[in-house]
Image (cartoon, rainbow, N blue to C red; front, side, top):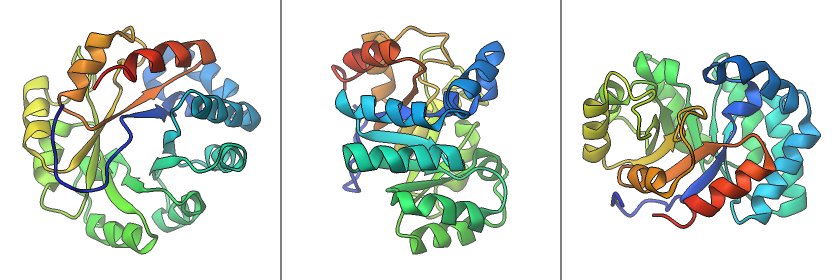
Length: 235
């Protein structure tokens, strides 16, 4: 496993929530997922609670109001979760206020702003710290963005890591080099390439070579049980 400094330990596995918002990478299934989850907060709560019952009380949350509300309700049922939340695009201060009641360990700036090296990044890092969380950077181009931002005050990166190079821009070689060189924490996203990869032990073992934690999007309880049983046996 990729070894890092003595900062806060990350849970090795998190429930990812990109399917909950019907993210575009799921193609023809995006609308189905959005209706199943985003439009049905009670079902999202049940999903979080089931995850906790399987030993994964950690969520990588996309910080939209229905998801925040669903997780707040799940916390009432199952107790505290480890939360790493990504601020959506829009008014940063308003979105920060929305997610703060979750008491997240990490708050991540949206990839669009990180990949563009937005001039407000340092301001937002300070705002995240003032909110009591650790600042993280999301990226869709880890091979270029991580070296660019590594001297800023971010403590973690959310970056695509998988065995087929899906989303690992601008290419796999530069992405892996950036992940190996950074001393910041790494949360792997898109580990199963939006459903293109089966949850096999070798897949998770590969990712854990470069990442401290894996956030995996799940769409059914059966899929959750299968994926967790494999992933938790690795690392």
